Length: 141
Image (cartoon, rainbow, N blue to C red; front, side):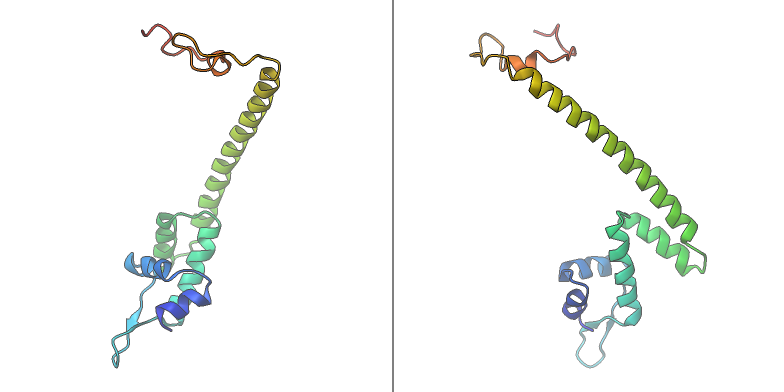
């Protein structure tokens, strides 16, 4: 299977396939007759694994580690579970931070609804934002 056929088979781009080839995650062989790079069943299965892992937010470095463990005949599942647990924890923290930001934005917008629009004067840019509690640098002139 040529690079274009492999990319089409997995609904990805030729550049993606070439990237994973370039960094050594999949390895094409050269057709001795025409010199074209061709991808065998192992390369196709490896690409399928890589694309599935990427959908679960595994980084390329994570994938390299997982493949290395597997290629050395060891069971990668504990590593995979550990990485996924870490990703879930990170995602949960970002989600909670996003919820807090949404709450603050809603509260701020409600607060600002009844405040007048004011023409900037002096060093003021927008009194709405400047009225928010942020104290760093207030003594700087």
